[in-house]
Amino acid sequence: MRFSTLTVILASIAAMSYAQVDPTEESVALNARELLEDLGMHARALKGAALSARRIDELEARMLDLEDDIEDLVTRAKAKKSDAYVCSVCDATFATARELTSHKDSAGHHQNIAPANRARRRR
Image 1: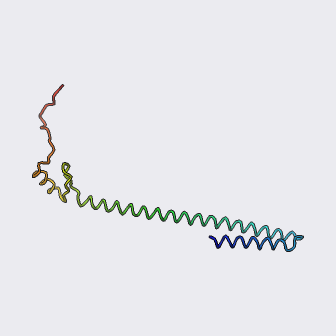
Image 2 (image 1 turned 45 degrees about the vertical axis):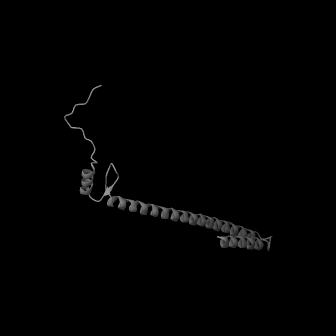
Image 3 (image 1 turned 120 degrees about the vertical axis):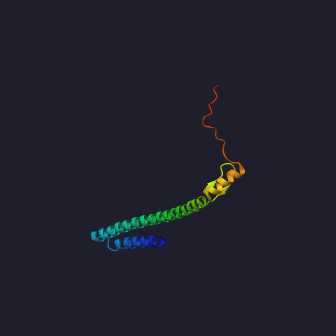
């Protein structure tokens, strides 16, 4: 970016000195003005390219952050799949439903379920 800025400045100085060579001719002044307009257009294009490069860098950084987030989510999902069965009372984890049921039976961690025919009390 600095090199292109220096190039634009040097070209504008050259254009101004070229315009001052023969101030009586209008064509020289017009050519210098056109050259300066072209340089301005190129300077705007370079500025736009620099902004685009900065945006690309920002997008690449955001993409890297998103990739890290996706990796974390995949890692968590794999961890949850391996410990898919969790006891609701003591938070112990088990690989299969059979192990969880066996744990609940041996530790007495079943939830109290009221019988279906039991009537509710009215207050």
